[in-house]
Amino acid sequence: FKQDTLQEGELMKVLLEDDFRRLEEITRTVVAFATTELTEAGDLRIEADEFAEFISGLDLVDNRIIKNLQLAPEGVVTLVHPLEGYESAIGFDLFSDARRRVWVERAIESGSLVYEGPTKLIQGGEALIGRMPIFLNSEDGNEQFWGFAIVLVDFDAFFAEINSRAPVGYISSLSPDGLADSSYSTGDLVTVQ
Image: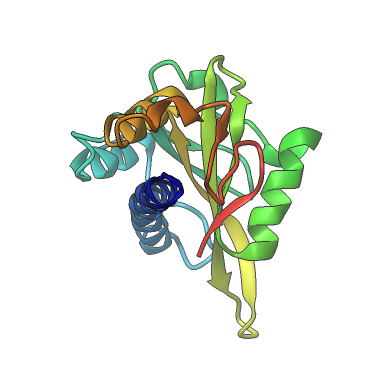
């Protein structure tokens, strides 16, 4: 029995890691897009409709767990897709909220995709928020923080998807309230490297 539980726990860990890797790949794609759409001064040269067109072109059709993707130059949310229902996020300064600033600074310090949550969104609802810092090379050769690519994950859908693949009998131990037998825990720092 203990061996079965261990194997099921390892399976759940693999499933979680796989889902986090998929989210990281999508976020890295947004980072790559953003860095190709910058002027020499580091300003975005794209508008909301071009960002929406790019995001719409990503293979997210089957991905019900992503609420939206965002770009936040200097930590200010500027581009969001899909925008509907998230209009109040535009112009939000991530550094202005002391609770979020901790997570924002951790992402910058780690240089990696860092998840916060589940957390209440300024526009309502809850999500797991993944922030990947974007760094540009400055003239002196050092990396300079530019902003963030952000993925908002529908927390309930995320766990429903994982639970749908869980071994029978394991579902009750995996819920948005905590990840049993796993190295991840909600509300704690999760860094994908």
